[in-house]
Length: 342
Image (cartoon, rainbow, N blue to C red; front, side, top):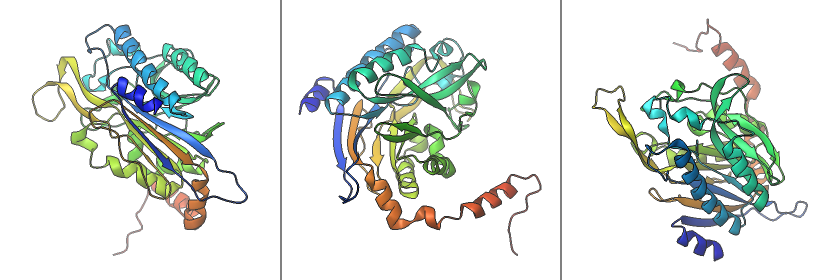
């Protein structure tokens, strides 16, 4: 009730659900409260960069405080949450100023203090500036309940569709499919466009993930018919919980840009439709958050459900990974010949 009252005061769409597992004799319940955050930008996109970033910091802190009141253990923010999703513009200035160190940048300091304050594991997807390689990455930073930097994952799949001109800024990640072993469970992050690639989801599962977050920024005209399906399918196929997170709102930029489709230039990307949700390995899922409003979804899940569903369906046991690996190795060869019979 306290969390609901806080959320109402903060104009948040707050939803809370429970996804239980069957009680067992030999294993204790492994209940974890998982939270998904979706939010609009706050300041206009022609405001100074630090003003834009700091306004979002204040809003996100307000939302995390509600999540803490709701007893959240693990929380994930939306893709590149520290600023607008500017990649449609193809402009380097001023947006590259948002790029920062994964383990010492302003967003890390901010998130670290909140994680420690609330004993919460927080996944913070940012635009990373890698001083070692002198390059930029789309990165999810994982901070543990003491505020310690655990590690990071860089986005594996970069879109080249519509106004998602992300390869103007960064390329495919080099961190593989890491799973982070936290005190609340084994978590992984499949960033945005990776949700369209079943093998990307699969690899996090093979590495032992129990919860896979999918922090995203995607617009209605392009992907909304796919959104309710993909994370849910991944949860079923890989015996884990999948959390789809999408930003919300329509972002307007100072300068017009074209989309390469023959249409007139514009200065709006499109509507980010929110609708964040949690999907379970048994095929169930929560309702989605609002399409138009900042939101916080908290789901209490029992991680024992992962093994219970795995034991029921035996997907890993009946899979033919050796067969797939052999076929994929052949497919990656320049002289590949399809197994086509006429």
